[in-house]
Amino acid sequence: MLEVILQGIILGMGVSVPFGPVNILILNTALSSFKNAFCVGLGALSADILFLILINLGLLSFANNEFFYKILAVFGFFFLSFMVFLMLRKTRKVDLNKVNKTHPLKGFSKGFFLNVTNPYVIGFWVSVAGLSMQSKNSFALLFGLVGFIVFWIFTLSFFVSKFKALVKNKHIFYINLFSAFILEYFALSMLYKAFIG
Image 1 (cartoon, rainbow, N blue to C red):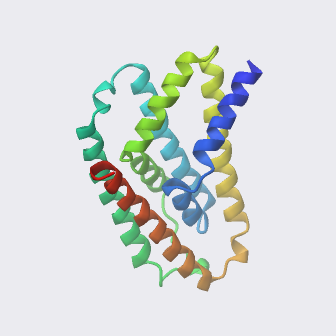
Image 2: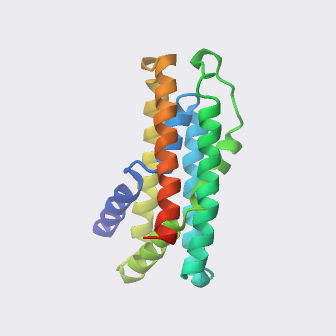
């Protein structure tokens, strides 16, 4: 059983450590609030778990078609682009000494909608569902996977929040700008892969 949990942890590393849209959003949010950044990650994880449950119940079998992926890609593109717009709009106004505290539910919903509108997340969880069916102990595999994702969300949020004192206000502009470009890259990439490649 320990071996299967370890496989889940390794799978969790593979999905959560690379910097995609969720990690960029967690990083950006953690500069102002650990709690909100952690809630962004929990929101994204909640969407993941929802997909996994729906796949295991057979309720997402319709999602395994090209038309559905294209619809999700369009929604994902607009959602990510809107987040980029908001990020760029407040880029010049950010002052770490005067951070507006937002409700953690707002961060949770951002993370949730970010993953719900990403067709590649569904593809990933379809693959995981297949792996868990082949595993000797699917619960242990999912425990290791989800456990590592929660660990990563906490660790990333905590360390960025803890060491934000090293980040000066002038750096925030560049962090937001860089984050916005990366998120827009993912938005455009999602559209490109859905419709062209």
